[in-house]
Length: 90
Image 1 (cartoon, one colour):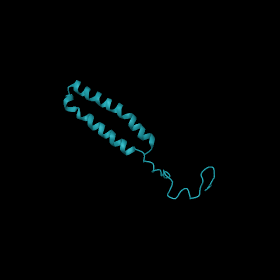
Image 2: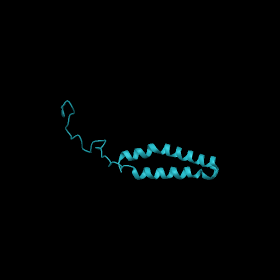
Image 3: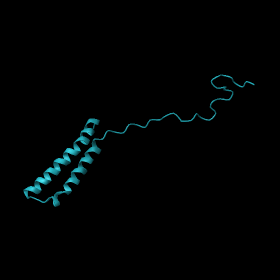
Image 4: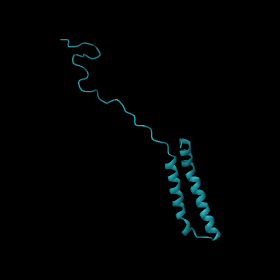
């Protein structure tokens, strides 16, 4: 999948949960089933949404290898005088 489908899944999670909550309240209001019996549906819908987000997640970029933080042993070579180029002056 691509990045746009991942972001679409993330953006649609809230509205889908809100619509599910509205449907459950409507079912309770109509007397079909009480909210105390249907609220676990919110957890199921949330879990399905998280599952779809994991399926559409873009792959992780490869790790970046940075140069070492400190110079290797023996650097700078002996006799190097620094920026002034002085060498081993007496």
